[in-house]
Length: 236
Ligand code: HEC
Image (cartoon, rainbow, N blue to C red; front, top):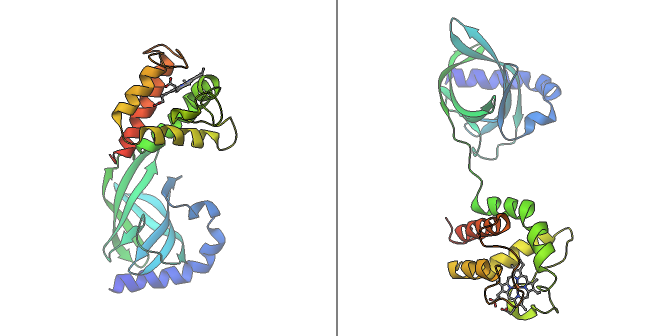
């Protein structure tokens, strides 16, 4: 408890200085470690929250961190925060040279405040969601290359494929999102609908004829994008 009070006192004292020193960048959510400075945009102690800058020094093989700057910030919960439980400050993730680590920093001195690295583990980078992957693939390889060049000429409201249930819009600011949505609506969770699209574009039973060869790059991209959309719709 004494340690906790010490930390609070110190944080209050340093607060004004810190407000001047902290750059807007340090208010971003993720912790960073740059030039031996560990920046924690949100560190909570009970129901108080601070942004902290801790400086690393190596003492006899120990990794010690002293407080360089601190500022109290509004407490909005502990999500994504580094949490100090009175003994250990747990940093959920910090990018160190391109790899994410979680850190445990044990408080070894209350005056001055010094934390010592007591544990760390590599944190796997979060994989983008299926929808995010589908969107990227669509934007990069499908909207222009397939929809605008090969489909929209017929598959648009009022044109020959009006009744097909697959209607796109011409290139505009929101067209990629709208056209991805058109595929998503047509699929509606059905693997058979995916198969139907993939066979129709190769000319099988399609009034619009052959738009690509089965298995070529365009066809593969379309198939992969539809697979990802289905995965998203299945809630995987
Ligand atoms: C030359 C005009 C034309 C082009 C180009 C065209 N289509 Fe079509 N497509 C049609 C018409 C007309 C229909 C509705 C009649 C039919 O099913 O063949 C249709 C039907 C479809 C259907 C079946 C819809 C259903 O009824 O369930 C799919 C899927 C489809 N098209 C996909 C595409 C895709 C994807 C492209 C672009 C790669 C494309 N088409 C290009 C004219 C076209």
